Image (cartoon, rainbow, N blue to C red; front, top):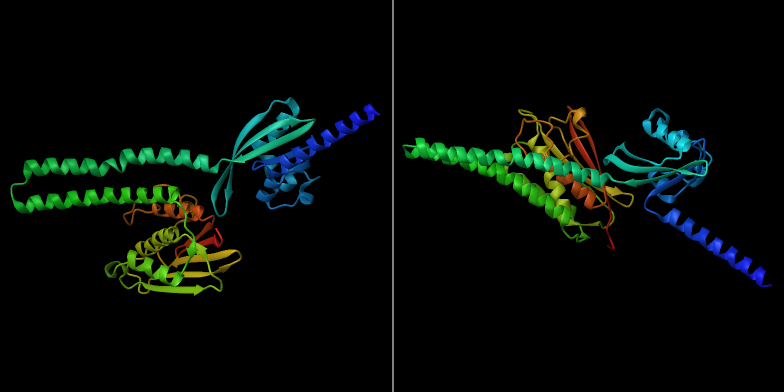
Length: 354
């Protein structure tokens, strides 16, 4: 009797352990998969299925190359085979292009499980971006930000030595002012970015008619607007809640770019802003018929300090700020551009109740 009770207790403990392991496997943020010796799916957790937009029954029993076409041509596939063959774990950093968020970076740990393979993957996109941004910032700080200071100091020295009349002195003062404004503009953009990344979010109903008018008035003065025609289309049927400061910042940058990069001498330049309902939130489009962005630059336009053209002065931080505004609002942004103009489309979830 005692022996039977012990066996029941052991069985219950085993079932509890299996239940706990299954719960951990399915609820972990990391993507886990288990493959057999032929690299055929045995199991996959919810994080992995969510990333690839599959259901469990669609992957179990399938070869990994059926689920991820082209994988057999990569070094990662050969490493998987090597781990099965040798039993020695490997760590791989993998970068996958994503149509809306740019590059998606993962760190993959491949290890032997039975005679097959276990794979654990974690998203390191933010870490990679932070390292790259820090390196870029360090480089730019030592060049672009120091350059105006060096120019200012040089102009002051020349002014001290050569200015013999008031007009010459005023000319030098004007050049010094321009350089100081240039550096101040970069610093203002960096301060704005710091606020975006560190600030507390506050969600309230957004009145898009008022918001867009406010942004347009703050960004585009009469001299800057010229003969540009502005259009605004709002088609919302339900209240939308979001952070007004972030929305204003991203719209300011997009509208400012749309104005700044218009074609010179175009008879009918225009900028259109439209807002409409989209599933769980809104879709915002900012379009123009300006000079456009060359296709080879599309993957870089949201990078820190990147500028696709030198036709107009700028800091290279505008679209970088836009990217982080969208990210803070848990949204996505897409870009379409050609010689006929540019359209940025932003999808934002409704934050009602948060």
